Length: 481
Image (cartoon, rainbow, N blue to C red; front, side):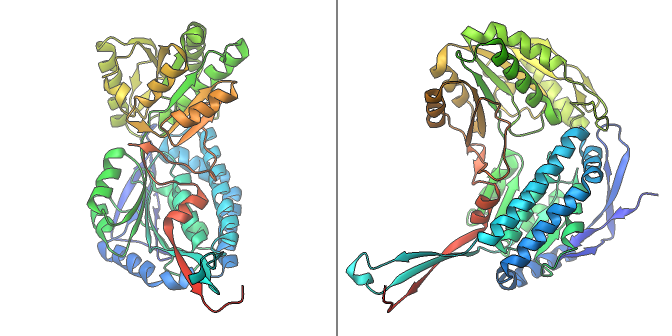
C-alpha cells in the first residue's frame, strides 16, 4: 500500500482528513498519495507565519545562511532519489530532472551567500545641503510581510526553491503552495528545512487545491504574492488584489533569431542543435523554450533542414530512461490542446515538416513553417514540443518579428557581431536577451522576468529578496561627519 505524504504546517509535519493521488503522466501509475490540509490547518499556518514576522526578521544571518547551506548539501546527497521523483510525477526525462535538482542546489547555495551580505545597511551623508548638516541616513531593508508563493508544475522542485530560498535568506515568512499535479518534489524541501533551526512558523508547504487559492490571495496577512504560471491566472490574481505586491512570472513564446553573419556550417549546426534541444526539452513545457525561429533569408535554406534533422533525432519515450530526451506532457488534456493548435495551423495553411502525432499525453516533436500570424500557435504560448520557423530579410525585420508578440520573456540571437548584440539588447522588448544561444538559458542568480504580458517583477535570489522587502531609512542627527 502506498503511504500518504504529509504536508508541512509551520515547520512541522501534519496530515488532514483528505488525500489526493499523484499519478504519472507517462503511464498513469500511482506515484504517491498526498494529505490535504483542512481550512483550519491553513488558517493555523497563516496565523503562525504572521505571528513570527518580527522574530524571523531578527534571526541572525548566520542561522538563516546555515539552514540554506544545509538544504543545498542535502539536495546533493538525495539527487538521484529526487530526480526520479520529479520524473515520475512530472513526466520530465530523468536526465533533465537531475539538472533541475542541480539548479535547486545552486539556488539554496546562492541564497545562503545572499543571506550573509543582505541588509547590511547603506549610509548616505545628508549634509550635501545646509539643512542636513550633522545628519546621516542609514537605509536597511525589512520584510513587507508574509509571502504567498504559488509554484507551477513544470519545475516542481526548482521553482519552489525560487520562492522559498529568497524568503528565508531575507528573513521573511513564506506559505508555499506547490502545483496540484506535482506536489511531492516541493514537499521534499520541507523534509530538509525541518532538519534546520529555523523558527517555527517561518515556513509552511501546503498542497491545497486551486479552488482554495482565492481565499489565500485575499488574506490581508499575506501582502506579497509570488506567482509563476499562466498569464490568465497571474493577472486575475493581480486584478483581485491591486494593493498587494505581486511578482508574476508568466508565459512566453520564446524566439531564436539566426542572423546572416551566423553562416558557417559549424554555426548553423550549433544553432540547429540548440534550437531542437530547447524547443523539446521537458516536452516544451518551459516558459523560455524555443517556440519561434526567425531566420535571415541568407541562411534560412541551409538552417531549416538542419533543424528538422535535429528535431527528428530527439529520443522520445519513457522519461525514466536515461536515453530519453522528450517525455510526455503533464496530462493528456495538455497534449490534446497542443494537437488542436497544430491542426488549426495546418488547416490555415501552415506546412508540417515533421511530427504532429499524439499518443496519450505524449506529443511528437513538431516543426511548422508558413504559419499564419493570426493562428493560435503564433499568438499564444504553446507549452508543448512545437516549433515554428519563419524567413525574414535582415536584422530590423527579425527584431520586429520578435516584438510582434504580446509576450516578452527572453529572446536568443545567434550573431557574432557585438554591435548587433547591443542593438538587440536595446531593441528587443523582452526581459532577457541571450547572444549566441537560445532564449532558454537561465542562470538562477541572474534577474529573470518578462516584459509586456510575460509578467512583472524579477526572480533570481537577490532580486526576489528585494521584492519581498522594502527600504526603511534611519536618520541620525547631531553627528560630526
